[in-house]
Amino acid sequence: MTDLPGEIGEERVDAALGGLARLGGVPVAGHVSVFEQVFAELEGALASVDGTPDRQR
Image (cartoon, rainbow, N blue to C red; front, side):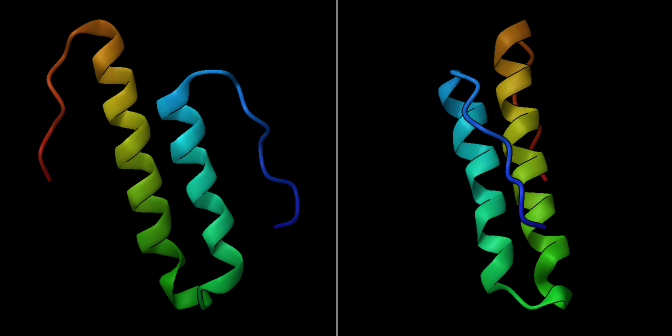
């Protein structure tokens, strides 16, 4: 993976997507945990937009 998304201007989303940059330094076996963390952060950002409380995992 060489192309990471650029900043979109929403601080929480940009921070979450920035987590994808860690993939290059993590063995493939660890990618799932990185994706899960990024997904959780994106989910939290979306929940804050519509007033839904963040889900706890």
